[in-house]
Image 1 (cartoon, helix red, strand yellow):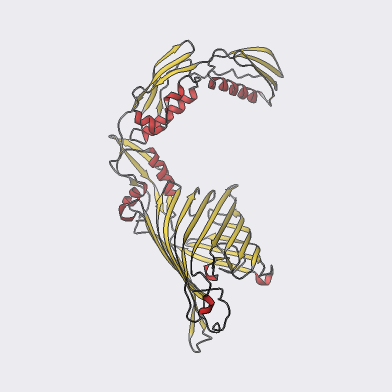
Image 2 (cartoon, rainbow, N blue to C red):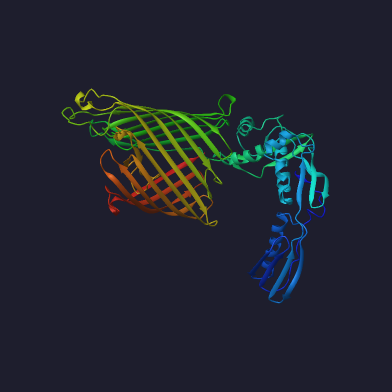
Length: 574
């Protein structure tokens, strides 16, 4: 697609030094003339010797010494002494823009004045050509060619002008999907911002291919192809649907100890639907209840390219009922934008609410309980950057994400508590929190890999409550403990997990998780946690089965087999 026509005859010819075949390992490199230098080297073999000499000549060319003269002072089987006269130093007199549009030069960041009076370095010219051609191919001219015209030599200087042949203007034709997918071509076209009739851009194609790798519900069925005809470009995308939609659950019926003769419904239910109707919409629902008093619920929805714009919209609601202590609700609305093929930024507004569930017996209390009633309205920013080779099942690459939010928290006076308990407390205060995580996948071989994760967070407020805190522990954070086992206002943990792959998506693993947690609400101070264990992930025809066995130690749990935890589950995919 790119053609660089450089007609500089003796100047851009590689002044290649001869490939010496001597078996000698000792070299003396001596420069005389404009530069004076003597350097001794001990080299392994004739190949290393030849590469070293070529590198030295390249350094001379970059400094403007285009015609060095070489002579051998001494040469035998195990040594070589080269004396090189640098000769004259050549410089640019001037390099003019020629027929290149000044706007094009500005967009490429090229300033031709930097050539005036500078050493003649053909590598700078090559980089200049590359920048101009790259900008041209992103503006609809992928067949542009450039050269130096009117090249003239005056004593030790060169002058010339740029000559650009733009070639035909190319526009995008319809984007074609050749794989087995229900995804609508209109959605992919809007997602990649490749629209029929627009000027061709190689950058859009390259970025689009990377963005598709970030969609978990699509996979490549072949290599993308590009064809040109009638001054139009057609992009062929061989993508197929990935079986990523999931549904699984467990329902149990237990006798209700508090209400005789009735049954208590317990269990877990999860459903995740991706790329609904081929438009990129995602919906998720997660519910969990393992005893009468505690349960969690989370519902999320995602709408890409809202109303034809480049803005995505997301909404979520979550609920946490902690036995008979408190009830938390969390409503979040966010708007996201792809700032690059790998980077995604979102702005959100969030309302968190917490309420005490039981105040019986607290009427005579002389201090406020650890948990409380509050309303926290905050606004924040989330940024995610992905370098993974596969967003759904990565084997190499990294992921980084950081989130920050700030807002006003109002503590509500509970009518079941004495009003005197709230005296002297500032009910409306500023609160903020920050969370960050970094994941790295190391690809050691087709059979071996290592997964690591470093995550941390903090929440700050004058009157922080128990139901303000982060919940840590379980399969997605520190294994070897129950889900949401820890309360923490500051946390930092590291996951280290070597894996042995016995199939494309199946592996055995061992792990070690280390954490540092602080809970200043309950005055637990700092807790140094450690857990270790093993497990496996097994891909079946219709889903994935996971099994992990772990032991955990903390200030409130001993490292004991009696307290070991088993995390297992089967996720059906369709």
